[in-house]
Length: 165
Image 1: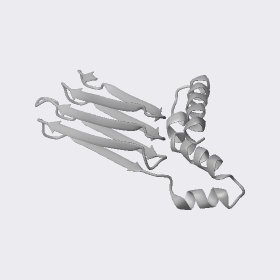
Image 2: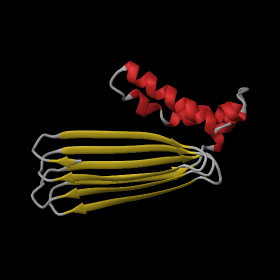
Image 3: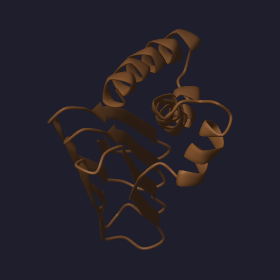
Image 4: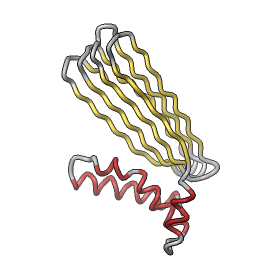
């Protein structure tokens, strides 16, 4: 993604799942070639079985890109002891007066959440599916129309049911 020109606003979102022995690798670049522009990148993943994921994201700000506002986030939910993930966020800032940040998290489903759901009669498998679907909730809610949201939600749900078998 190359951002040229003031007032440009770019928001990119990616959701994925990994099952079996899948390997998901993402390398991104948010290059701010001029200032007074905004970019945001969010990558959300759920990995099960012995799948793995890797995210390497770079925000690059040229020396004349004053006023840049850029953000990137990578979040990965690990559903098995054999799944693995890695996040490498990078900032390459050559300008002053910019706002650039990044975040990354890797983790498992909270045990208290699982306990809560299971104490209300939800099976362990269904509780895991519900928690993983909830992980993608904001992503789906942010989609531009209900048809897109329904399509993405169905695809993610189908994959999560296979992962949580």
